[in-house]
Length: 375
Length: 225
Image (cartoon, chains in turn brown, orange):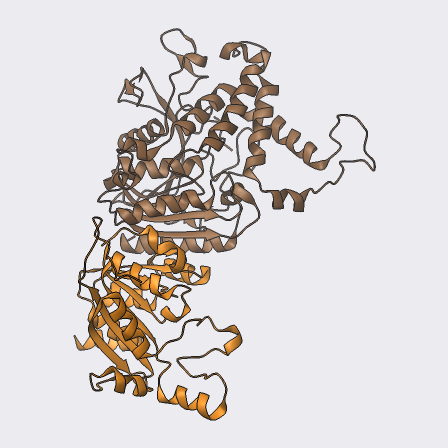
């Protein structure tokens, strides 16, 4: 376990860092983890992009929760993303709360945490920051960019923004454009946070605690969207929690209630409410086609990147139709693209779980791409 | 050159796939519809230097292709061909899949919209052994090319060489090349008459093109139905 929960922290030389919105960050730090060894040619770097509530601790115990890294089953020696073979980098995204510049870090202009004065960021800003980190580490390009959900958005943005710097790309359970339904869910979460009196207009960093109740509700609502009805039914059904009969009150009678409360309360221990606002906003703003004249295919024009797009049947947050739209655009752009939809009842969160068939295919895709790159 | 031929033989590719490979010019872009485990794709990419992609319905097939380093999209030829832009490929290939499509005619039309040319191979239901089986036994024929019992066959639109040639003519599609494949799986240099091939060929291979009118997007305007 790391001494510093942030892992490696690097202060960016290239400042001020200009954001897509036009705003500038006077100084920027990036917290990141690496696994494996960069080869002499610097051709074996894999960027793993984390989802909304993830962080850089992809394959080591989490310094705050003590739990396994969020993709420990995917990244490691001999694993699908084999750290004996590849140099894996995972950064805490811009706007995050585990070491990379975000709303809880200090605004140099005031000496206070940024709070709600932090500029609104986009997925493109997260990607530009990752690219700036690679520049500073002296890594010219990526063998592979891979990630699920918001991580998949970053993968797509990488492939569009830096086409020559991504040899292969694996966007999983994601979209090229945040849907109205997902913006709606994000708004529910943000309103829950901002309605909590402990949010204090975003200035809660010197208060005893932040908007725990609001953030917890946000997490509970979002967590439902990560699962599926079939999965919930199978796991919980209407089973009661530690009791034989209904209490005719508002305790957590049902196991599903207890589970969600647990999800909410553990989440607030490791996540910053303001970060949640900023990162969900970045996802809402994500519309790759809009950045390229309204035609998604234009985002990938002339690309040489090899794509493997993946979706899961029971994912209703980013359903297969979203992945198909990406594949459609990649086909129109004459890109090398493979697409698979895996059958599972585990919902959106399937990308975090060890679905053996999914892992086999990724292993095949990454292995074949590595062979093409002479790794 | 001899070594490469040997390599190809060593991979044990079906003869009809080798013949399809010969019809395709190196450097061209190919979509193999219903590519299965990717045998043709692999041959095209590695032996013929073709930029080949696949579409496959079964997950097992797609998994196998991706693991072989091939670009394959999981999809249903009856539903998803419309996703591909007009003229995106030099060739659209349909090898032993035509007879399993729900809407054969629409599938064929889509192929010549997506591809400048189409290559289609299918088992010939007019083959004399097939005819004889039905005549003599009074039961649905089964053979190497028709390997399923009638009740669980994916082949829902079986046709003869003459049937297929008629459909092409009806749609204004030109047959640029025709190849009959005999019962030993080898190309049979039969008479050019489809009538003779219709009796003697176990399988047929067509290279098709559309030279008729097109709409503003470049999609073929097939003759009125």
